[in-house]
Length: 228
Image 1 (tube, rainbow, N blue to C red):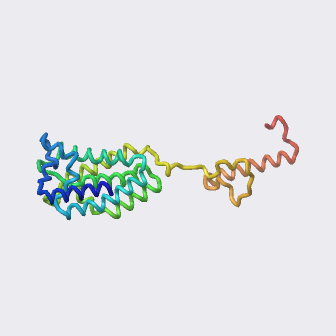
Image 2 (image 1 turned 180 degrees about the vertical axis):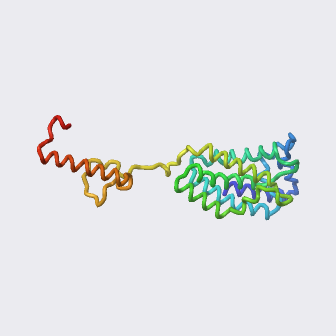
Image 3 (image 1 turned 60 degrees about the vertical axis):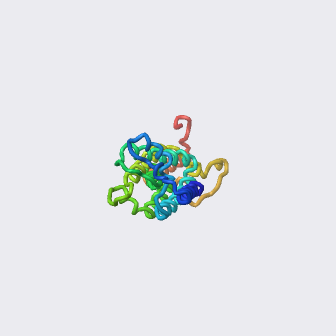
């Protein structure tokens, strides 16, 4: 919410002062345009442009901050800067403004985190983002004039890269705990063995046969030191 508030404040400052904020956008391969790496996501050309980025930013940054607490800040910063840098290096020579590259980066990060992490929560989040923002996939192609599709593309690639880099950082809520820990010394009767879903039918049959053989040996009095 704080970041989105900054976007709106900047937009109102531009309207009230008649400043040409596009001067702070990314202009590829010009030293004067490199400042846009830091400032271009804060600048929007219209209220429609601003609103279209504000809503997904709130949703995606909430997901990032709530479900990926350990990596939220570095992920956001890297996507923010890497997208702008890639646009400055490789995009067509035009002024690029708006936070849509960051939006695409966050969508990509949440989606690919579900692919790389493979835990239930990250997969569900990936599916939610896919359903909500499936229409964004076409945005990485040069289908409309006046749209910085390069920002979309490089943002998506930045999100993919960051998701891969931090996939090994496990959140506290994702750590698996042993539900039987501390119960070894508490004999209890269970309807089914606690490892009922961990062994195959053949393995259980072999265990039962082994137990029966032991019982037979005990009953026949044939158990001695040579049988150990």
